[in-house]
Length: 137
Figure 1 (cartoon, rainbow, N blue to C red):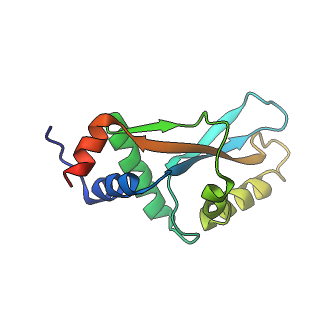
Figure 2 (tube, rainbow, N blue to C red):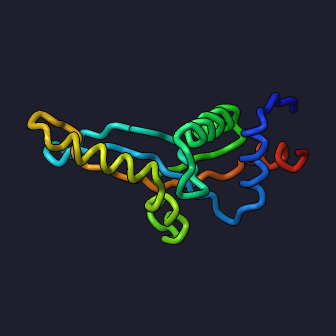
């Protein structure tokens, strides 16, 4: 297997291999008027510090998406049970704070469709192929 991985992708694979759990989130916008309306603001979000920058989080998201597309990582947002502490950093992050403030400001407009910020909890894990590649790093 020959993968041309970026440093960010290698870091993620290494960190996933070392972690017991690898919580990620998807930042969504919901409508209080129409339940079925959901818009993804940012997907494959992995935050490790409350002050992680948007640029860093977007770079990690792109790396995670690429690893998933290469079959090295499995990502799931359908989990029903999670360890609450795993997501503390997300709720306290500047990025989630920014999303909440933006939605609150926009909700003051009479024609705003998306007026609820939502943090969709998920996790990522290495596939068998991902385990093999991560072990070689």
